[in-house]
Amino acid sequence: MIAARGANMAITGVSAIGAAAASAVNRTPPAPSVQSTAGPSFEQMLGKVVSDAIGSIQGGEAIALQGVTGAVAPFKVVDALMTAQRSLQQVVAIRDKAVAAYSEIAHMQI
Image 1 (cartoon, rainbow, N blue to C red):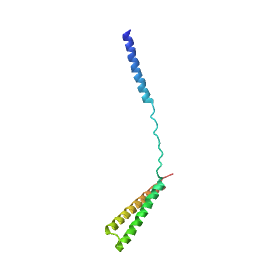
Image 2 (spheres, rainbow, N blue to C red):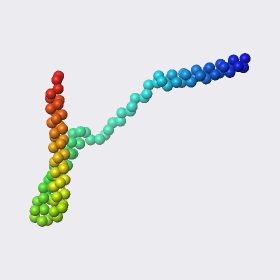
Image 3 (tube, one colour):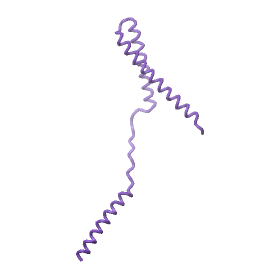
Image 4 (cartoon, helix red, strand yellow):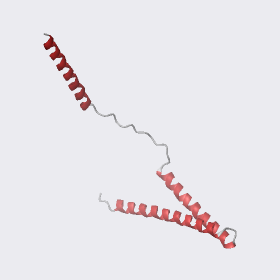
């Protein structure tokens, strides 16, 4: 009787593990939480990049004019002009990507 009772307990233990494993397999994972981002929109971000580039180019021009008169050291003129050139290259690269994307969309079949 004791042996039968022990065997019954073992089976109950095994079946409990099986039931727990089955419930773990059949359980659907929770949906990932979507957090709203309160960051700037694409339009605001692009506007900031363009306005920063315009400011950089205008600053480079102003320092270049001061460099011509000798009011600013030559290395500062070169630094300002290189910054303006990098800003202009960034704006041109963004423009090229936007034109390429528009062209790709325009060639899509409806």
